[in-house]
Image (tube, rainbow over all chains, first blue to last red; front, side):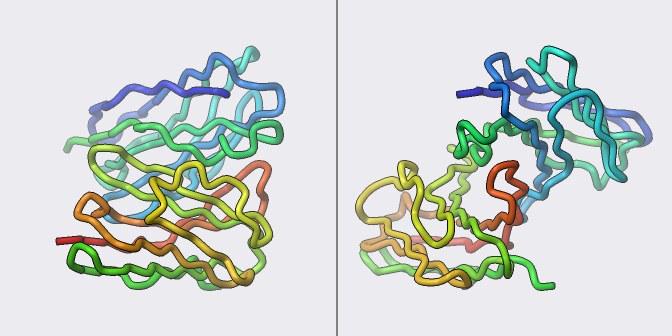
Length: 112
Length: 114
């Protein structure tokens, strides 16, 4: 089963780009990489998902190197409202349930 | 389109009482998940259903916990008898694509057992 490792916490300032890296050394061939964001007193919210190379949406970009053993969530020009916990999940067709197992996540604090 | 709906939002009860948490998934979603979140343990997957059938309940803490999904639009998580250590926020989530798994979460039910 693909286990994920992320930094426990990160600090940033408003307007900066933030990159959060997740390690998943034993990712399986059919696994996808999914990132969620959670604000206090709310459930996690889907941010972005990818399989390989780069994915971009209106909120973030996801960079996945060729070996897929890690992934980096990139948040451009963060604001105070981006302060949240960010989770990286890995799973897919062959280990269905792992799609939905959350690790401790990365607590991002954006400072003024 | 309404999101995942959970009730109650808050519940305070006494040790030994039965607690029932309810969830209505997003229409058309075929997978439903129950999570528990505490400061100490983070977000734990308790059980999930696919097409109303429980697939994996290995995260259910003990026999005091049970979950049902009698139809595609309703699920319950029951704790009987409740204990103070069950105090947590319980989230329900649903998913349309069960393989790539984008989850949609409800607002949670905050349970306090005195």
